[in-house]
Each structure stands twice: as C-alpha cells, then as structure tokens.
Length: 340
Image 1 (cartoon, rainbow, N blue to C red):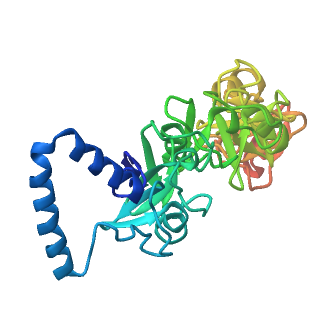
Image 2 (spheres, rainbow, N blue to C red):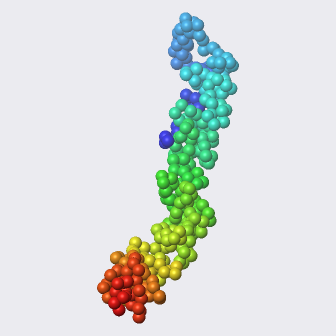
Image 3 (cartoon, helix red, strand yellow):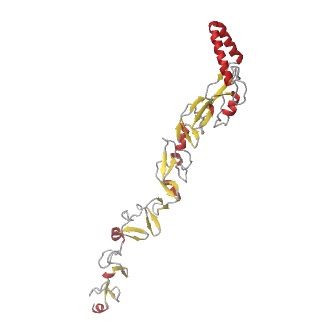
C-alpha cells in the first residue's frame, strides 16, 4: 500500500497566449513613430538593419504565426506552447493532451490535470476506487494501481472475519480462535446461532457449540441425576455417572477412585457395607464382606460363616470342604461327632 499526494497543474507547458494580428502590430509601430519624430530615424534605421538581417535569414516581420500541426494561422487566437512550439487548442487536445486514467478521455485545455507516478486524471475523475469520494485535495493510498481514500484503505488492510469475510476494522470487538479472527457477533453457536462472546464453548467436528447446545446434542446423561455429563464422569456397569453423583447409598461419600461394593443394585463404601449391609459370621460375628482374607462363604441352615470360621466345634478342624455333623446348632467333624 503506497500513500502520497498528487500534483495539480494547468495543462501544457505554458499558459495560453494571444499573438496580435499582423495589421495591429504594424499600426502600433506606425503610431509609435509619429509620436516621436526624433526617434523615427533611429527606428527606420533599425528597421532597415532588421530587414537586411531578416533578408539574410529568409524571414520577415510579416511571416505567418501558425500551429505546428495543422498550420492554421494563430493570429489573435488562443494557443498553447508545447516544447517551445505553438499549438492550437484543437491540435493540442488531439495530439498533445494526456489521457485521463479514469474516463480515458483527453484532459483538455480548460481542465485541471492531476498526476501521480506517470498517470493523469481530470480533477473530477480522481476518486476513491471503493467509495468514489473525490481525492483531489485529500490524502490517499494506492493498492494494485487503485486509488483509495484513508477509510477504504484501512478496510483493505484490515483482517477478514472468518465467518462473513468482511473486514474487521481497528477498535472493533473481535474473537481469535485457532488462528482465525471473527467479529464478536459472527462467533456463534453452530446449533442455536447465538453469539458466544466471552462464554465457554465446546467443539465437535470443528463446529463450535455453546455449552447448552453441546449438552443437548452430544453429552451422555448421568444415571443418577439424568443431566448431561460435560466432562469427567464415571462408568459403572455400562452406565455413565457424574463423579459427584456416584456416591455411597448410605453415607453419600463419593466413590470415584475408591473401593466399593454393590448390594441389590445400590453401591456402598467399604465401611457402610460392613456395618450396615454385610451378613455377620455365625462364628466370629464379624461382617462377611468379601474384602481382605475372606473371599468364600459357607451357608448352612440359615447360618453364614467365613470359610475359615466353619470349624469343628470340638477339635477346630476346618470343615468348609469336608463332611460334618450338626448337633444342637454346632458342627462337628465325623470323628468328634461320635464322641459327643
């Protein structure tokens, strides 16, 4: 982008001139001679010398003053001097006048001519390429050989909005995202078309969504609160949960990242399961949780035992995988049952 000023001048290399007619010139010389007889001789003598000199050069005072191109006599007429040669108005406009860059017509003798870097304009034709404002007395810029006013030049240089492709002028609110610039009102949700402005947003397949639209269109629904899960979350038995919603059914303690167990489709932390849910061992009276050492359970006649607690009442032999005899609510190995 080049900035500058144009030159403003009258056409031609010299202002218009008028050459007196031959008769008028002779009358002027005659009147001058009669007014001063004392100088008449001198004038006459000088004229004689002049005539002799003219005779030698082949020219006289009565020579025609003609247009360089058409040879029309210019006595008493308007003319222009071009390269020290007299040219009539008609020939000047035909052969000498510069052509206006805008309208492609000659810049005549009655026009003002503006020039910039070898190009010429009528004063009224020197206008902004975009808004057509006259720039004869204004500052301007050029781009790709086109004349632009200051305002249009700013628009040409301004970055373009990635959505509407219009210029983003200096001082205009805008948003930059992934190397692209947007008018603030053009940075909108792909779904609802509302401006996102300074709100948070999410993307999907390179499209931008406000939080609300993204949740409705793409987010999974929490099995607990039935609301959208926008980030994080827990999966349990192929069901998604918010981390804050996946809690112990008894104490409401969050279970994400901790040990837990389930009972009748409800989840419990270890402590609540031991204290409130788990069955008690008929021998040691401690809860049977499946955590730690106890992994197997023995059930017999409504009683429940840790496998390591299911022992002979008399000799303490472990009976979890052996034959046993029950007497009076106690269990005995085969040998001890004969002695009781």
